[in-house]
Length: 72
Image (cartoon, rainbow, N blue to C red):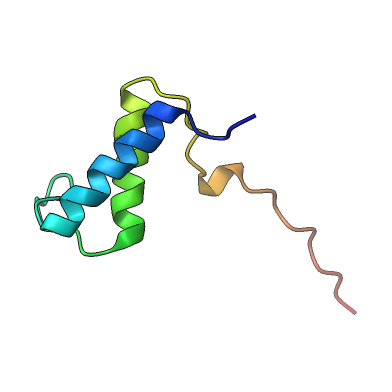
C-alpha cells in the first residue's frame, strides 16, 4: 500500500517545479523558498489541505519520551 496518494505526488511535483523556477514563496513572510526540504513540506501541506492521502504531521508531543536515566 502506498504511503502517499497519487494526488499528493503530483502536488509535490508542481511545487518542486515552482521552486526550480524561483516562484515558490513561503507562508506569511512571502520569502523565496531555497530549501528542497521546505519545498516538499509546502507541497505535502497543500496536498493535505486538498484532501489527499498524506500521513499526519509529526509533532514534538507525538514522539515517545525516553525512559529517565537512573542516577547512581
